[in-house]
Length: 532
Image (cartoon, rainbow, N blue to C red; front, side, top):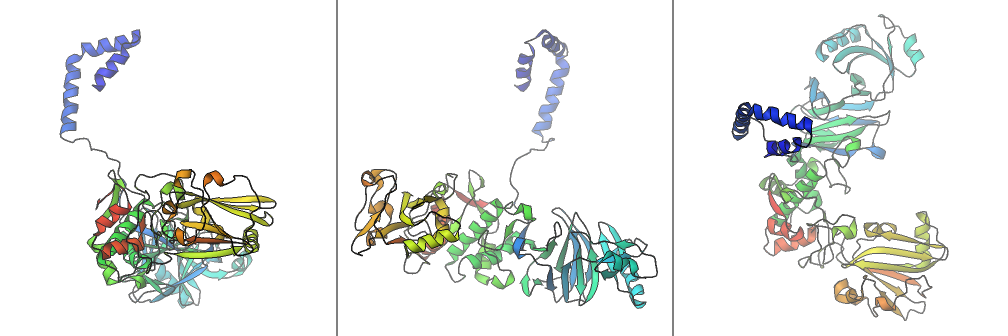
């Protein structure tokens, strides 16, 4: 059909007509070629190319980076170390020593002199190091790319290095912005100066500890532009989940919720591999990604849950779904567009009936601020709008989507999940009550965008405790006006952004007999759970 389509288009001009005539004259040849192509496709001579995100064998987790990066670290292992040069594709072994149990890794800020010889590998260079050390010289091996050399000394200035007399000339080497020194005790074992690859240290056969915290896999040290070193844990995806799941939920919970958390965490990992791409790793170890604590956080029950669901993720239309989870919803989860921006079909607001408010963290909460306190808080964030006149809130499907502070010299509006930021609110699932100076009049304020939605039922089960009077949209003024209120109380439910799976709600479902797949398909609309 494609050939016929092309022939039809060629017949438009005289030149194209000639092309068509030539093809007709060689019709027999054309049929033979077509037959061969059909055979090749039929018997898969050509590979069938499909676009599919790959599940990584390993992940890179940022432990220290940015402001938390350090100029030195200590690593330890009972089984000795391997030192490699690594990038995103390959790792090249440089050095192995089973006799050393502790190393210090620090950024290189020193000048040195270099022995005038290139060695084929680290072991050969280290033999020369031993000879020079026997002569009393402070020698050590250096590697840059595939070049192995021997350097002597650590000098603070170029002049100091030039003035030294190593006995083999004065080939002074300046440190680079990516240089790293690896020391055993106070003695430099090896210097790494490679602008394209990073230093990676692993235990010969066991776990490796970074600053006394044990981790599976290897620790990669990354310097960029002369900054301190980032420390990155490179390990298997499933091994990473061994630590994530017990940091996100209690290992004592029902095994079905542990499995649900394992699948959710695995899915989140796969769909967020580029979250910290600019830093050279996939995810960090905080709530900005998923909480990760290394080997010490692991527990046999959560490890079993990870193993039982190995490879399983949440899929929508056969592709990994960008899912999220949070601690508690307060009785109802949020639509993705009411918290962030995109309206995803599987991140719909759902009822959360099994979330037990008597045990769930911050299932119900309340905080009160005076006008003066609000002014101080906003001012500390650089928001200067004068004395507070009023505070207004707008909702959508039970969630606050706009919070406005109105002052004598301006106003400040926060939208969606940013609403939580200025007052450190636990969630956007809240109602606002305003108390008058005489402490006798309370008003409950809500604006749901249409009059029909303004009701206690639509706001949430906790609302009736705080509402004496519901202001219908038709009664509310959209223009700023002074409201005689001395304090503002935010009464809400839930902890976190509220999108996707509620961890405490999932626990309630598991305790009531639901399986991990039933839990996941409840919180994520229209999804499947399967191996990917």
